[in-house]
Image 1: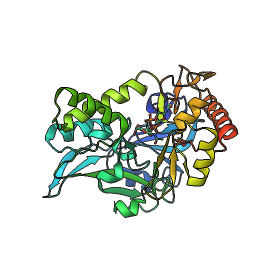
Image 2 (image 1 turned 90 degrees about the vertical axis):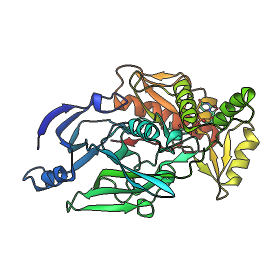
Image 3 (image 1 turned 180 degrees about the vertical axis):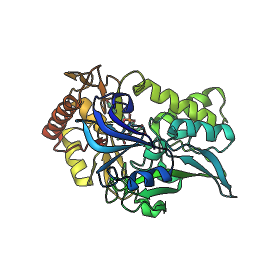
Length: 342
Ligand code: EPU
């Protein structure tokens, strides 16, 4: 086990925020986690689990032992009549896994292409895009308990998935290291196209080929094109994806807001509640393209905060709070942050 000290984390978080980990250990296996737990000084110390750093905002240096998850591996573990089951190490890049499954002929993850981050982080926030959430393609995962060192397998129910939420953000927060995730691609494959922008792409295709059924590869290409058009590439502009969750309100609250702002983008949910587009609300408050210090609101998607160069975590949080206040002032809605604030 290799223990590193005083490690700069700027390149380990997609927002590119500066912070120093006092101690960092790279985790390549379940045994590595147990090695840390058995270590005389690291064992009893507080720990912080770091994946691809695509969903965290670092506001300070980290006195905890940072466990950087680098577990590799990618294979088909089961081929059933109703599904392909693929197992991926938590340290694999999510997008690389999506592209590998498609290339191998196990479609199903195409709507989730180009989401930054690692496989191990995907269940934590139940990543989702264009009508598909991780929970719809999830089979099970392995996680090592940070007190006992015991590896357990958790199924969908045990992960308690919700909208950008799971047990790993709630009762198991900071208590386990996810080491492997198994994904379930249902057979036969069916495209998920309900999302407005995908429907537009389908309509364009059918202008030239009226009977055309899109392939998984076409949907992948569309999703990649849509994301590239409105979301910043973290390799070029630091960001952590959507900075706030889309708030879910009661139909009465929604009617009240529509009464004042008839244009508000909103989606009825299966349980009768209504999801409001936070990006629209932030945009309506005039934030798009604004900057505070080195932290800014992305020009093409107001739900995404970006690093204009040398941002520090406190500037990002000052901007986030100012946005929350103005949205509250105009709509009476408190926006919740989506990434984990450290
Ligand atoms: N909108 C505006 N102005 C803006 C931004 C959005 O008017 O500046 C409007 C759009 O025109 C659209 C609506 O708001 O009518 C929703 O926007 P969009 O389709 O871009 O989706 P979103 O609700 O803002 C969510 C996810 C994204 C995911 C997309 C596509 C959350 C918090 N975000 O964004 O996920 O890619 O849907 O499914 O649920 C992420 O979580 O990091 C993320 C990028």
